[in-house]
Image 1 (tube, rainbow, N blue to C red):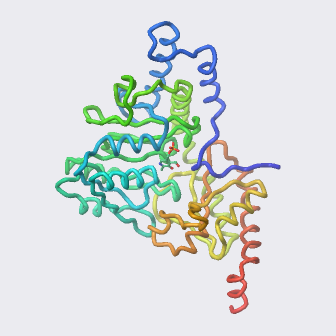
Image 2 (cartoon, rainbow, N blue to C red):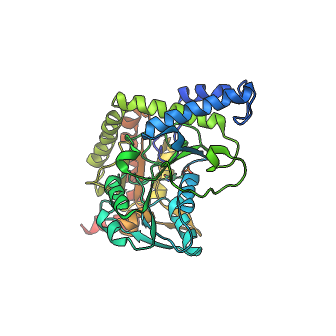
Image 3 (cartoon, protein in one colour):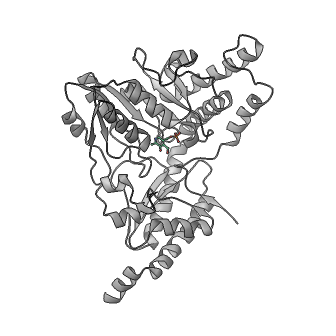
Length: 388
Ligand SMILES: Cc1ncc(COP(=O)(O)O)c(C=O)c1O
């Protein structure tokens, strides 16, 4: 069966160039990057080249890049590493669980956390962040791009607020990296997390930018790796892959790949909305990363849609999570004010660098017919159709 993958916000395929760059580090170049002999020097040089590429992607100094195991670790390291009991933290209600549950952990350990709301477009209001500040606020953590809607947050304004208040600012840029240009100086953040597998590098590697001079408590204790900010032997092949992916992302921006991606995404979105009734875009009216479109189709169950499309070879997702047997609507969409049934009827389409026009056209043939068939099966929808 022809399989089309439009779930790149969940994970992306490793690009061939990335895999080729990594390959020697699984075989002949196997040294521990901390060893002083030839084998170690070879892998140390590769790690430092990758650090340089990531630093260029983020607009920071090489010494400010800490390699991690991914986005979750970067978020945990920044939030736990910059706070102590008694501190107050400001975050938003639409963060990824890697941030939200780390904040919950802080609350259980003597910190206070304010969760600022979002508006109907999924946007944080910087004034809400300013108003949430207290005398003991230590950290603001607001994401750069939301994983479900792709909505870009006003991080530069929030960075200014944090700087004026002399409060640390961390941003989870996992869904922004490689999709939109990032410049940590413009954002004026003290910490920023990225993840390899959301930008065509492998799973299990990421990086945290930590501004020079920032006092960050490590999460792990052991060797003095990563300037004592992250103990543990480096994942050399993964780091090399992340470096290559960063390089390719930079080249992509030079070739306007982000514009081409948004053109393709818009074609998908427009095509779906032209064919499916009672459907709309979640996050409409806000700036979004170029690859994401989150669309509600009233009177369907998102999970049923995902399964039906998967049977036809199209991979997409819902933001919903199954907890204790019940399907919980996405906390992001609920925070945006969507009714629970509309949140459950929402589907996330997310493109990757490998996505093609042909794939979008096939998706455009599959999605409306699947929506129509599922609505046929919906007793509520049928009752409404009869009464109209
Ligand atoms: C916004 C955001 N933050 C953090 C993460 C976690 O990253 P990782 O899977 O690398 O741990 C994800 C992954 O879905 C994400 O979308």
